[in-house]
Amino acid sequence: MFITEQTSSAIGFASLWSRLRPLTPMGRQRKGEHLPFLPGEEERWQQYLDQQQTLWKTVSLEKSWGRSIEHVLSQVPDVEPILRRLDSTGQLALADWFGLKQFLWQGERLAMLLKQEECVATAFAVASLPWQSLLRILNPAPKLTPTFSVDAFADSSLQRWKKTCRQSEQAWRTCREREIKAVEMDYDLRRTRDEEWIVARESPHLERLKQDARLRVQRETMFDVIFIYVSSEEVRAKQLAWEEAEADKEKAEQQVLAQLSLSFRPHHMVLLEAVEAVARLDLQWVRMRMAMTWAGRRPLWEREQIELQQAYHPLLKEVMDAQGGKITPIDICVRRGGTVIIGPNMGGKTMVLKTIGLICALSQYGFFVPAQGCHLPLLPYIEALIGDDQDFHQGLSSFGAQVVRLKKVLARENEGLLLLDEIGRGTNPVEGAALSTAITAFLSKKRHWTIHITHYHDVLTVFGIARYRVAGLRATKKGERDKEEEWVNRLQACMDYRLLPVTSEESVPYQALQIALRLGLPAEIVSEAEMRMKEGRKD
Image (tube, rainbow, N blue to C red; front, side, top):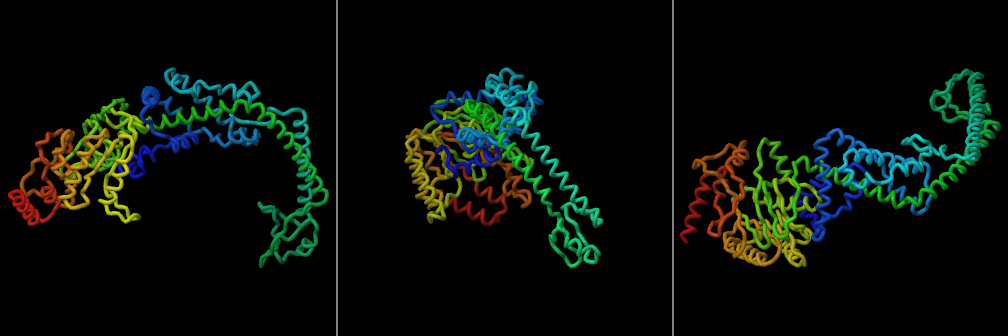
């Protein structure tokens, strides 16, 4: 599995994927079946991105053209059930043929729009499919129309039955209406919309109405009696004649449709290709539209490392935009082995993990990504151990659940992207530091792309790892504190979220007490903590 449900949720991919809304039924179906590009599929991946880039350039120049494409895609009906019936039984009903013609009509419109832009027409199979020739099979008349009528294929037998049917129906309705009018003339009545007669109980005609064979009591109330019409033998005979004519007409229509099904069945494979072509165009289109919202850049293939320039998480940007704040894009290069990130609490370290994981996932699902530059390999999988992994069902603590998940990841044969958020934090500090350092040392010798966020200084001493730190709090006046209602904005203003390379000599920054003070923790507690830290360092 490329990405688990836990990882997808943790990095925000699940949220963004849920916003991807294809415009066609087949696009929505293929979205649920869509798989990421994996190692060995680099060429197909880049071809996929080529298509998207072509669409993007064209839409940017021809906005009205883009709106037309979207309108037509939104009109495409679901024909896959129809094609399954055509393949299995060879028989389609009248409604099926109408749906199939609508699909071909919209497909032809799509092809014509794509052909207006040569580069787009070349990139998508929709433009080269024989839409018009298939339409002609369902449209014998010279002028193409989007509607379907069996009359266009009617032979003399069908025409005769249709005429007989019309005449029989007219005779039945005329005879029935004549009898109903006679009832109303006899008793001075007027029908309701439900073809009932409501007669007051004090009416002098009530007993005669109850005895009249043309009428039947439908129901009674405290004040009224409601009658309905009963057909005479003559009316029933005419109705039966019409129904028999209708059955014969339908039988003749079925013969025409059966012949049409027989002539259309050889085109079944082409129709399946058409469905796939429309679905692919649809998915590429909605990917492009979503990537436009974050001004996405095309990811490029790099064999050994993940390199991001000015990358950011679009969900975080939405939050910051709503609050009137700004995000700090990240620059990072992750090579095989271990990369460690340190920094103060609330410094954005976890968001760095989520951003890297999200961009890698978006890339391999064929998106342009929220970054100024993106070079990366196709990864076998992404695994993120972020947040509280506590498993209530198995009775595992956060630490236990974290270890179980890490064990499963390390048992996988291929080397993927591992995003580790403070391994060992759920146990005592001494053992946590030792375990965190040992895991980092172990992974630094493997060919995984591992990024580990930690507060343990010992982890920085591991040989061969790359190191980054969040810049942290800017200098502030000693003892400066924020009012409770503005602490979030003030803290963000004081925090430098830039990700900076560091050397092994640097230590994990000690800024938690400053942050606690700014968030309103009593100064007495902070002062005592500072004193205890100094005493601990002397020891």
